[in-house]
Length: 165
Ligand code: SF4
Image (cartoon, rainbow, N blue to C red; front, side, top):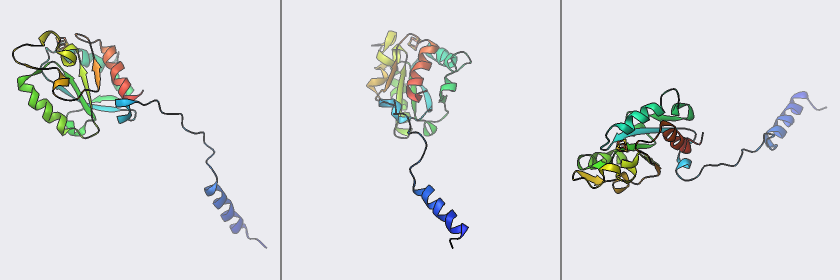
């Protein structure tokens, strides 16, 4: 006679060996820099020589109307806690080394977002005497947000391209 505990063990073995009944996960839409994050991105902001216009728009991007935070984007206080950098402004001579050091302090894989025309291509300050160049001239850039300054919604959209949300 077969005991009930033996039957339960057989059922358990069958359940463990059977294929899962859940549906397969949808194919990933992540590409490029986006694949470095998984639904969220923590960014250390670096002002490399901005006029502060971009900072005002970044503040608005994280304010209730655009609310980049609800899409998984967050600003953090240290590059050690960050997935990447959000850089504003043309890179001045005094900020080239700090920007490079902050980049090196960010754990790999790291993403760099250049926010505003100055960061992307030098903007109105390109070629000035105290300027090294755009962000790309100092550290590799993954995402560019053009505009002088960019709209908060454009900043949020760019950050969403990183979080995938
Ligand atoms: S892009 Fe425009 S707003 Fe932003 S730092 Fe440069 S001059 Fe200022």
